Length: 77
Image 1 (cartoon, one colour):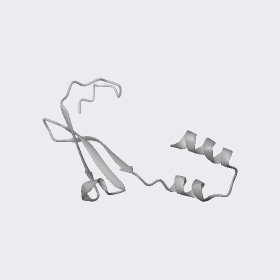
Image 2 (cartoon, rainbow, N blue to C red; image 1 turned 45 degrees about the vertical axis):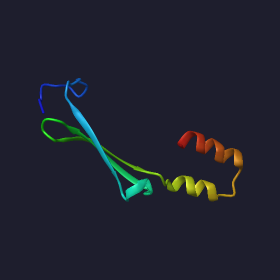
Image 3 (cartoon, rainbow, N blue to C red; image 1 turned 120 degrees about the vertical axis):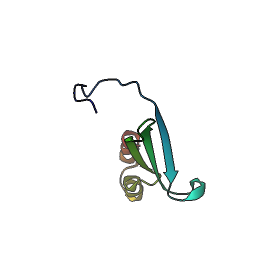
């Protein structure tokens, strides 16, 4: 929170990570995680992940050239 720090400054802080699935037992397709600063409890970063990716489903259903599908998959997964 110090305005004198640049965007690329390295800070020596303690953090913890916590995450949760949408459903118990890791059977959910969606997950969220948070990086939390230990002293203040402020959330510094978060991420949302999904096991399901619509683009993969769409490319798999196309009747296009298999070589084109492989190129797309290698560059996007």
